[in-house]
Length: 295
Image: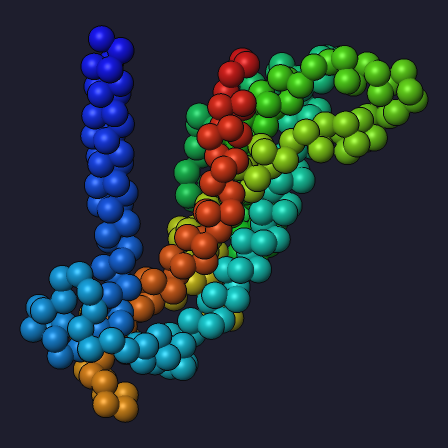
């Protein structure tokens, strides 16, 4: 009986692992296909011979995308990196301080202030009123529009506040007895315990800022302020009257067509965020669950 049970468990594990591998391959394949198209020669690509592995491996498409001044990929990447790094840092600081304040039971106004945040989360005024307000604060064609208005995401604020509510009050009481003030308690007691939630929220903020398209498209007019997403739009979405329309290009002994160059631009845009995930993946499950257990 025991042997039969072990065999059933072994079979279940094998089936489970197989399914997980297949699902992983399905999820990874689109990313790999973009890479294979970008690194294939344009001739076999035009003939439809590229299905998985690249044909006529080359890296000239990336070189062409970076060196062609009309695409401005380098400036777009630099801008997105700066917006993402600074925006994530500001968002984490502001969100954490606000969550800490709203999680303190001695703060008598915490409930109605939390309701105000939830109202802003549920009800959206729309693009036109938002544009009027942003224009009043001189955010139009200003890089700070990528950093200041999104410094607090209500959903992430709720997760951080719930996480802090789960930390025992005895730690705060002991710190008060030792003479610590609120800032010392937040920085020296709660902050070291919040690495998991900060890593999780930091990744969410970074991905959100990096992938942001509508805000920069509306408010960032100057070419030197454009993000990589706007650059990607100019590369991928082309038409016959646009000066960014691709024609076949011969670089050295390699033929590049529009599919090579579009895939290269997409891969360049995806790669920085993809590289971040392996370093913070271990925090995701724990961070989100801890932030959602206690109401």
